[in-house]
Image (cartoon, rainbow, N blue to C red; front, side, top):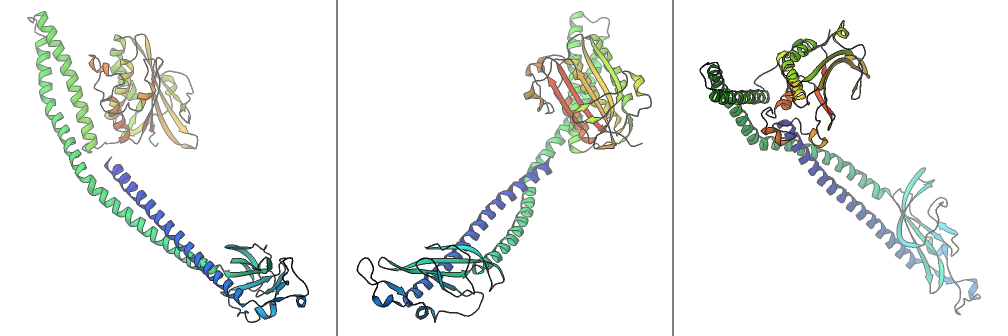
Length: 463
């Protein structure tokens, strides 16, 4: 229990810290990337301004063509404007392209035209091109500006910057962030595990003291209760005892017996929790155990009366269903082994609790049916299982209460605790503790007014 709580604390601590670190790393990465892009866009804008100032603008057709507003038509002398703008063939150079007003490429530092639509915008955009100089598809950051004088469009200037000026440092940054985030999360997880252990230590010590107190108190109470019960039973056989006194002593004897059972249950659970009692697994014939338990419960069933029925069979485990094959009765068990590895006394106590509860909450003339089945999982025929189903025709359990059945001192109907035949609310908690010791599990299916079915699944002993 404490290890599970410790793992959960460490996991939550690590998860929360990991989320915070990932948010910080993501924000830092986005900030650096946007900063690099802004720097590239600023460089492109500066190049546009420089080229714009160096453009040689002159009247076209010797000034014979006039525009609508009465001004001569202007044009850009491409040779004079761009002869000094050619750069070297480095991969990180900035390329320039000049287009006429109709969008036709007139001059470019690229070896050939780029198959990219012309978008006149002073905002940078990222494009992918296949350019001969690089020999493979590359990504460029581009900025396109429309050059005009008054209302006359002189052309379009597009400048391109290699994208690896952004991708290279961001890729390196991303790798560093992944490595360091992983290291930090691992360190936080280790620290969280250690800190949760320190935080749980006082709780563990307190719980251990409480369990030890419960075990000691239960052990010390057993002898006085046994002495009281013995003396009361001795007094009851006195022939000179008055009827009124006899009735009172019978009440004392009945209450003492209930108190003794409660103390035994508490002592058992305390020992199970503390690990004081380790099971001594041996091969146990489950059919023999069930037969003995039914013989012990037969008197209680006959007093109600409730019919007890024990069936044996073989089947196949598919989901939550067990299908019996063969006839009913002990004859069907011939040649079938129902052996499991476990503690015989604990298993007897387990099925005594289940069958006793079934009889207690089944009305007169009802039926308690026990089915003992040797089954196997569909996925692995070699893995044999022993399945015991205890089904009754009792009052049933509401769906909201089923998940709380195995809690200590839990009762579906609190009014039952005031009945003389009611239990202590520890029987199913003891059953679950025994099954946990045997690496087995129990399932409950119930319908109010129709009955309840407890299904216990145990691994069969190897031949």
